[in-house]
Image (cartoon, rainbow, N blue to C red):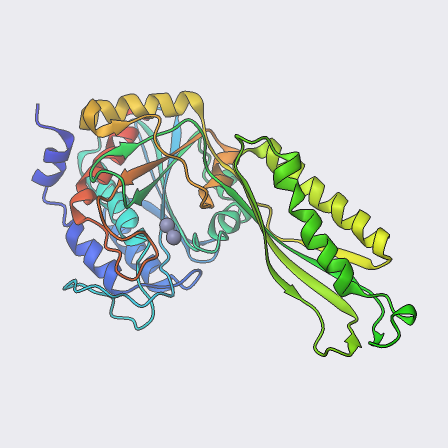
Length: 385
Ligand SMILES: [Zn+2]
Ligand SMILES: [Zn+2]
């Protein structure tokens, strides 16, 4: 029996054409209008029921075949980055200052390739939902699609995602049960005192001193409240207060990013930030406001479904090209919000020894396109059989 990858290639699905088109026309988060129109146009040609404008510029394509009652969602991301591409590729970005340096063009192409193959063969039984999600880079596309009632309008039992990863063996799939990517919470804390003349601190309440104490106290969370084997980062990346040496300022603003890899630890760390902020503010007699951003989410792969996907991948690629458990990352991914709602599996496809994603010289390995497409086909045929 020829392998599924060979079979997809024998069908002469022009994935390179889709890939080059998307690569040359990168669009930033929530501006993916031309990409969405291109994707939707192709999917309609192939017989999918296509809905556009979900979560802004998101596209969902649905196909139901046979009498199977299982429904799955395969998700690709579509947005590019505000990075000037510095490659010599013949299909280099045509848009100044923007590029597909995270490889979302390849993710989209893999899903399109699988979509075309599956529509042509018609060999699955159940409901297939193809989700082309915008704005992954700003962690906003998945929440926007969920907010647009994605799961009610397109019921799905399981969801799946895939990201290419430089530094991992090209053409090899890495699957890991449990937490695979970190949650990021971006918060702002404002301390309000009473400004005045620098010579008369007794008539003022100094938010700068309170803020300084708070910066130091927050550093104790990782060392004193988190187990040594548990990965957490608390970074105070901005501390803005005051202008002049002889003026006590009115307020101080701290900006934090907090990364965590375990949902319970995340809750504990955020609770400690709230408590330390309140106690420090009371101790220094300043007012405080904590502005909590979009809640972060740890990307947690479902144990049982990860085991199943690993089996499917081993049959597809051979055991030597499937790694479980694979590496996990402190970066973040908004697929995590889907994984909170449905049992999900998010895998990594090695991109070989290339510059890292987001680097201006990053280039996605086009040899991976049929591998990714075949993985999607194999997952579909396994779950919808
Ligand atoms: Zn990225
Ligand atoms: Zn990405």
